[in-house]
Image (tube, rainbow, N blue to C red):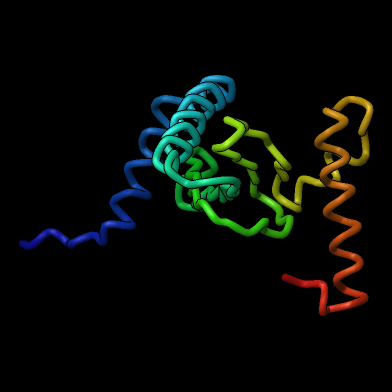
Length: 150
């Protein structure tokens, strides 16, 4: 009798489900490890572009695959010369190699989480609440004038 072959995706899903039930991950543990990995990737991206003259931006996209039940977070780091538009689930860093400067311009959560920060703004980082307001203002303006969309 032959065993049914599973796709790679199904194997990953089964492994993640098995691990989740046998070894729950504490949220602080996940955040700590994710933060270390994020910073390493950010530093590597800056170092890989150390010969760039002047300024550029690092756009960080956050992905949370559904098949891992919110237990895996992937970051994609892209460097670019032009400033990207604000978008949810994204960080944007300003880098200036001439001035040895690295600055976080904004970091937005998932759009579905905006209400968590806006319903109780005094209990959250004022800068984050400000970024969310900035995004919502730009988003409403772009709906009024579609030519504003990047």
